[in-house]
Every structure is written in structure tokens, then in C-alpha cells.
Image (tube, rainbow, N blue to C red; front, side, top):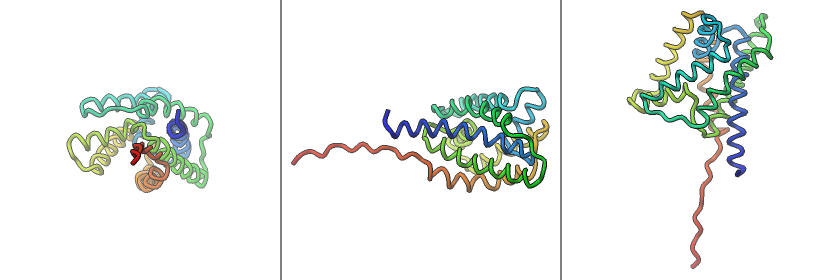
Length: 205
């Protein structure tokens, strides 16, 4: 195993685990979560399925939606489905619910920053996008719709369904939508593992 490949594996695993912990921090802050987590909360409340397992199941359903758009999963895609849910569930056990406004803001902000870092780690490892990001890019590639239109449409639909099911929509949801793009725009290039360039030997004169 080369040092470059070992770094990619480490980044992928650490990034996915931190991603789940970041989700749990924002959930425990209680001031709103991302659209996909609103959906997971809503489904969890309606079915009684634990939040972490619901996150896994939603990721699996989204992965099935890749089939008609001919999107191919990578190792990172599969591990995303398997690891984020248990990590989020562990985080919900680890972090207590907070109620004081200042504590809520601080916990949510820390979770948002950690999620941006985790996104940079796992995407920078170059093992394939997560199910949700892959759905967005796959629809964009398949039909040529603008990326921001695809993302906005998907997240508005997801948010609406999650809200109707009882998910927590709040100021944190708005903050997430406004800030996550600029944050990951910083972390992904910073943490991307460079591709190794194989140089062909120069023939002797």
C-alpha cells in the first residue's frame, strides 16, 4: 500500500465518521438541520426507526435512484451509506440535547464547521461521491440541467417532505443552506489528495 493510497483510505474513513458526528451535533442543537436530515428526522418520528438507521436507509434508497441515471457508485459511496448512520447514532448518544440559546448556536456552528471539514476529507479522498451528491451530479450529467437548479429542486422537495413528516426546520436549516456551499468550497480543494503522476523513464541518449 502506497502512502498516497493509505492517506486516501484514512481520509475517507475519518471523514465519514466525523460527518455522522457533525450531523448529531446539529440535531442536538435543536435549531434546525440540513434538508436531508429534516427528512431523516421526519421518517424516524413517523416510523420509530432510530435516526441513524433511517439515515442509512434513505442513503440506500437514493443509491437505488442512481440506476436509471446510470451513475456508478465508488467505494466511498458504499461506505457513505454504511458508516454515516451509525456514526450519527453514536453522536446522538454522545452529545446531550441543549436548550440554552447560546449553547444551541455554538453546538450548531461547531457541527456545521465539522461537517464542512468531514466533507472535504471524504470527497478529497477521491473514492466517489455520497449517494445524495451523486444523485445531483448524475441528474445534471444525464439531462444537462444546471447543477444549482438540480440541487435546489432536490433539497426543496426533500425539505418539504421532511417538514410534513415532522422534521425540525428552523434557523439552522437556513444557515446550513447559506453556509455549507462556501465552507466546502474551502475544504474540498484544501484536503483533496493529489493524483500520482507516473512519469515514463526518459530513454538514454
